[in-house]
Length: 186
View 1 (cartoon, rainbow, N blue to C red):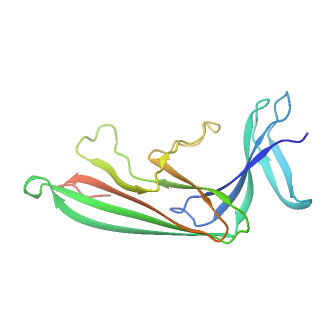
View 2 (tube, rainbow, N blue to C red):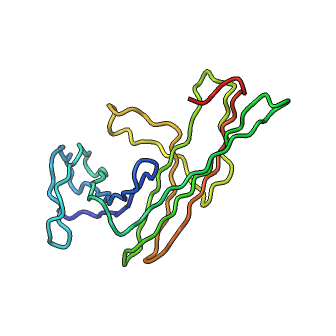
View 3 (cartoon, rainbow, N blue to C red):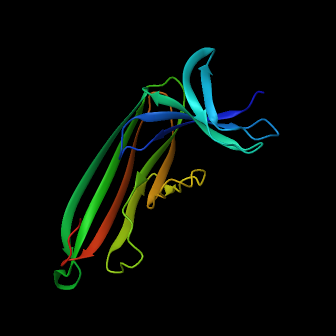
């Protein structure tokens, strides 16, 4: 049966500059889709073999469609230490993340850029993480609960942008980690 799909490009530049094509598809059936392989065709030509997860009736599933070579990504970071607090009793670790995007596609590309910043343990009150400048605005990102066996990631954020054909865009995030001077970052 025919089903509507929404394309989305996803990149996690901290791990890799590869941009992955995905499509969110709604199950058009009144019964569940069972997990297994699926052959994907684009405009009648075989693209790749992917995998479906168990999907509820009329539920949504994401299908991986391989790497998109037409979107280029570069991630650059800056870091510096400063003394902070009364009498220099703390270290302020300043971080800056710059992600540069460039589209060589002939069509607009909805892109999700995922990033992660450090989080503190629940019992660590003397370590503080604070986010300052973020351009454009990002939102917290939580992993899907569809795969309970995977470890849950904390501190995840995502930018959602649409790159027009031939467009360039820069994403920026600045955050600080404040620790007591007697400690060191491991």
